[in-house]
Amino acid sequence: MTISTDDASHDSSQDGRDDADLVGRVRAGDTDAYAVLVRRHARAALRTAVLLGAGSDAEDVVQEALVKAYRSLGSFRADRPFRPWLLRIVANETRNAHRSAVRRTGREERQARDLWAELLDPSAAVVDREEKARLLAAVAGLPDKLRLVVACRYLLELDEAATAVVLGVPRGTVKSRLSRGLARLREDLATTIEEVDHA
Image (cartoon, rainbow, N blue to C red; front, side, top):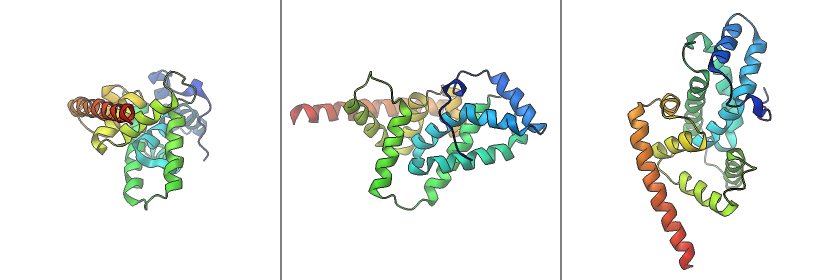
């Protein structure tokens, strides 16, 4: 299975009920309907895998997650949104891959950082390359629990409820970790800027 992330029209603007209809069709044996779900949510799944630490293994992680999601559709509740459910599976697969991964080479780490930066928004001219690099480095330097919440909320643009589902934590935990993560980011970025100014 090749993951296509080119079709922006299938990214995040779709109606949740439409997803539920597609899931119903898949359960009835329509495999083409699952292909539509994959095209619609593949980019978000890939971004999630990269931002949660899969790095250069992100595509493999997403493919495995999509297979597991297909096999688990019987447990999907049609009254819930599909995307957070899928991203929870991606997050779990990312954790599994991270646990079993061997130490990355410098080249692989650079490739993962490049992919991360590209997936954030390659066309954004608002933040220059240097500032984006500083921000990405600061986010990557956060402790895992804080980094995951910040990545979900601001880099993946999930709301608090979806972030809670994806990470498998209570919503109150999302709020407290987000608050601590943002405070740490402000502190780290201010320190970096001061160091640059005094260089």
